[in-house]
Length: 250
Length: 274
Image 1 (tube, each protein chain N blue to C red):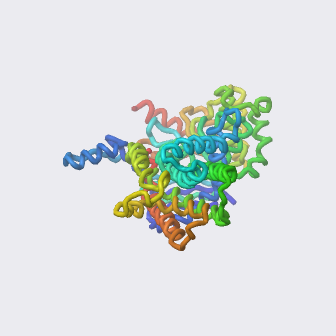
Image 2: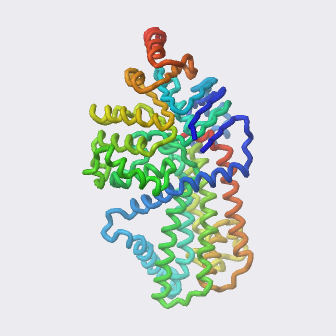
Image 3: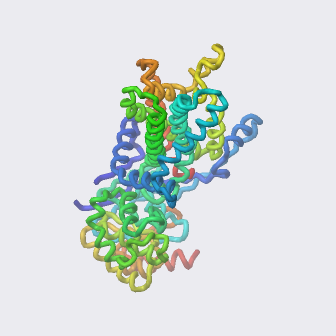
């Protein structure tokens, strides 16, 4: 089945708390002494009226300044954040590429971590067994695969994470600036792998500040600014617009 | 796989509970991994490895038995088994609930990076404690056989007792772990309350030791019913009544359903508070 993502009129409000974690003691004392409100909060729209349709085969790059809402948009699609208003409809299984460190148990070997990582993404051991060999081969870690992950270098760690996320043939892959892991050789190989993944009618959403990579990998680009999609279209044009109108004017 | 989220949809309790159960079933391998890793961490690098999970409760039972039989001038053998039939379920409840307060906070790393049902984390903790509980029961069985205490056939009903206590603990942990996200000091308060409650449960002494006019205190203590059920099932006397089963089962169910209700109301908001 063809994967699609459609988001309509989605707004996500964050509350910024003056004191995010009051203690029970403070709260009780505060109530007894009839002082003013202990926690004040201020609303902040991380995403504002997002309308977006992504079809199978699209590699969508998301660019924007820090705090524009790029990662938040991905997290909303995964289901971590629920928008206060709007509708999100996703056909296909969403797999976020897990950040280095999450879902890895450093005491366990690389091989065991393939299964641990898969389980956290909702994949069964049987499913992961199918991908095990491909993951090990792609990550080029066969020599170290039975060594506890705590002895891995950052690069090795990143290679394993990337291999797991891309080898399980996700229908919808979300990548948030993780790609830098590994040496030039692995980055080039990873880029090729990303290209391969598109062919099986999958969706890739890619958040990055490296505009060169965005142009190279994506066939559609979204510019986010202060939580709004201000422009979308051809990668080259969008990147030029972004550099001229947003980066240089701000 | 189609997922639809619409802010205009009204979430009903029934829909929420069934969705949560479906999600937990989908993530059962994550649960399995978490539990195994917890157990492994607990007994890691110890010379005797998993044998410790049997030996450590057994040894602490022996120590307590010696101390208390001196203090209360009772026959050590029978008294030991009596104390442990109270102490073991108490420790199971206590370590689940006081350890459980922090589960949502500890889960932050996962909850912010992947979609994973929140119930999974209280479930992980209570399951881990349940495995330890089972190990303790095995130790108790060994001890009882060693000192020649005759156990009743009702011992075979233990799985049911474990199930009821499991749901009871899960309900508590669910409720407290959500509240702890809002009030981080709750975990300290819970620990202190449990220390006090220890004396309101007939563990080291029988109910009859208290003057009659104070005995009602026990009946308002929800934990009392679980200890009594466990103890009766092991000894077989006095005979089990329907009330012995229905009160704990009812408490367990109510707590769990209340926990799920609180989770439903806070499910979307929780992530902003972590």
